[in-house]
Length: 186
Image 1 (cartoon, one colour):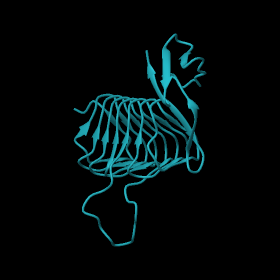
Image 2 (cartoon, helix red, strand yellow):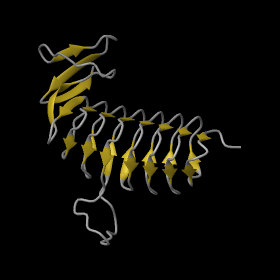
Image 3 (tube, rainbow, N blue to C red):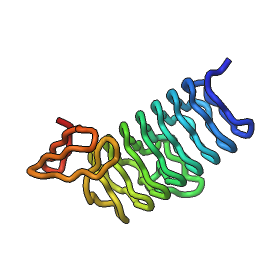
Image 4 (tube, rainbow, N blue to C red):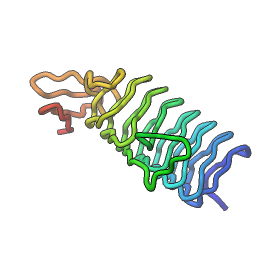
């Protein structure tokens, strides 16, 4: 008896789906995909063999996740965001391996954002809707635009951080420090 949900119209070929995860209508999860516990895979999603998804990840509707993408825990992928795995795609030209992309713990990607392969999205970073990310994003950074640029920093809860003398505090009392553009919790 499986301890996760697959909608009647979804296809799930993976034997590695965590407890309490949900795969909704018209989605396709290929074999050799690892999905953690308590994940939500929205409607009309495609997850290719080789993908690893952590625990408590939200994948909103209309997202394709390709081999080479690794998603850590508590990541949010907004509706119709785009993930890639080939820098120089051509029809009928097959690569021996795909370029790796890593999305770290707590990161959030806005609707319709595009993540070019080969980048790492830092822990708790936030990518604005419609942005195109073509380079690594630091932990807690808020990036927007085409190409995406750092315009500020956000807390664990996603609130914009305001630094004074290199320090900030969020509404939950968590304290942050920024040094040389790197934010960490103190």
